Image (cartoon, rainbow, N blue to C red; front, top):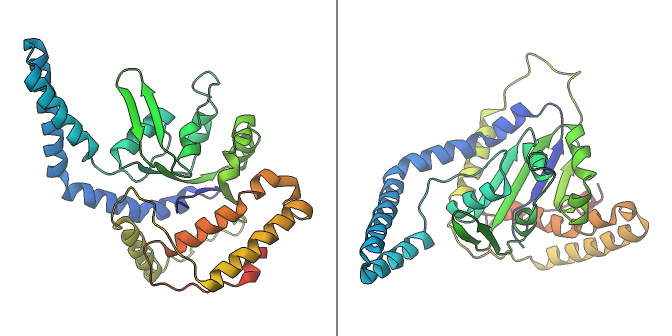
Length: 300
């Protein structure tokens, strides 16, 4: 199961929080792209030169040169070298597919305004929505996009992470959308509803402790430095974890029938999978870590 997850937090005091959340990601992205700027420029130059030679070969009817150019272009495009982009904000499904292709079939959407929800509902496309890529990228299913101007685009094992912090009104709009619920898009999300602290705001509130900032930045750097692979890593559970997950699985089945999940069965049916994603996220990039889990936490 992919480690990537879809999360939505409904909160009013969100912009500053998301800014701090994204800070080490953006810092890493900038440093990485600056360090590899020459590699990106060299790759782009090779593509442009081969495409120029290809055009000349077509005009001259030089089939041998044309075949060589096509072969070299195919080899280059199978291993593209572009500046990395770890997260986007408002993006159309086609633009997302293009960015994921350039980014090794991986992408994150981290946003505080939830513009992507408006785009997916079709507010800017005459009411026509397209959530197919968002559905497929949750589990890493291959995705093909037919582009009118640039031909077919194939994404191998695409994976998307979503982290939204939205106003309550946008949350209501998303969960009431018939296509989102009917096709299982909303059911893929984990939701959080933090308590508002507007009335308790203190102008002299302390900064985040430096030690926490450093630990968080190190964690993000370790995750982003993990070797790239098209294979989905496998995380093995020990005997105790298997027993805990098994008990929790049957607990969820019971709650779906006669408990708190009875009225939200479609969402609840995916909750066991979301639990595994949380466990995988806690161990990603840290294979030697041991996590002690209190079973009572699952009931909260």
